[in-house]
Image (cartoon, rainbow over all chains, first blue to last red; front, side, top):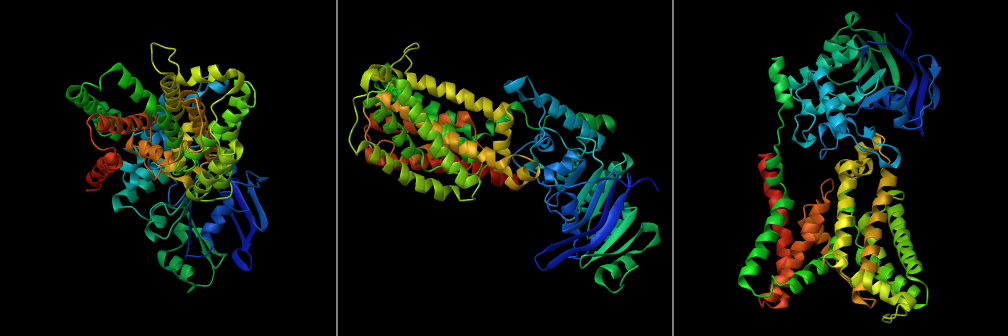
Length: 248
Length: 332
């Protein structure tokens, strides 16, 4: 397989006496979807938050395109091409879809201190992204008025503003309808097809088996499985999550 | 399929007219205009130049402070200290000028005081995580007390060598007979409206009020923006204080007492949502105007002044009622 985009080597994280993540190594490749599964408290979120720059690892190294990556804040992860779709989506209900997509990276026109927001360009670019995502989301609509699937589309559209290498998605299908789940899975495939490495954290077995190329299972802070979807089964993954199967 | 999707995307869901008819600010404006028409017809004294001049001048002080308050409210905060800050800034100006300094020094000292107080409020709220209600409630007490200390609780009405300049700034009418305070208010309102609509700062103010956590995660400098917003609120109170000093020609330590409630009422009547995320500059003006028209009309109609509070309170409840009804409809 091609060179890894992201490599984690012997990553550990402890909070006081609690060992949240214990000696985890893994790699991500461009254009693949990796399902990250595990029970509550298995360390999935902590692991992802280290990649996203929310936490610093206690031990181990993260390498992005072969170079060591040290992140202090979430914004720095984004500057390196690591985008996160948070579980609560981190959307402002009172703003338009376009305003949310560009939040923190507004387009402006003018010179020096006289720069004003370029509403027109932001609406146009956001509309282009929604079209590319084949979403019916409209750039000028307030997020408040949107369905769960449209809200997901807004959060995912954010990751497409710049050339992202890695997109981390935290439970994107947890609280939406069946039809909207299908929409979101299509969005994930779209990201994969454009060469992005996608990490999908999910509790929902069908979603992971539907869209992922590989599944990584964590239990009690350790990685207990890392294998292609084709080589495993929902039964095996369930056993790994619960501990009925020790490790593969 | 592709064509219908494109069409659907191009179609603006909320038309121009619908968005105006759906805004609380618009209906409050209608109420103000209807009240004015009614009063013009039923009384001889309302539509006189003298009375209109009084009304416009009276509501400007509340309106100017309400502009700053609107920014604070949009971020989901509150500033209870504005009445006391107005008093302290007026007093600093008065004491400095009374001591023989020029008006420039007086205004600089006054503005500086406002910014220091705003920075203190903002820093405590943004960096140390204090609830805005508590910090600004404390400042409400502190600022008025400092004004008493600065003046030894006396009335100041001699403003040194630039006495007449100060009175002209606040009490004059340099432009087509419009009272100066009104001109300042219009300029400041246009500036606030521009900032909210066209600058990144304005966008961030709304984002913080909508979802502060999301704003932080997406890289919005939440703390800096909050600090700035409380400084702007105090600055607005300071500016209103300077203008009011020139208009009144005297400063006592009880000016601006209870004003914070009028200011908050004006912002809320004008459509600002105390839960954060919603508010406009024009709303602040229109809300302040409605309060003043109610007050003025009660006097002209010969209704006992004791009823004022009831009518203004009723206006607050009624204005927000529109918003609630709209929300109920949406949730159904």
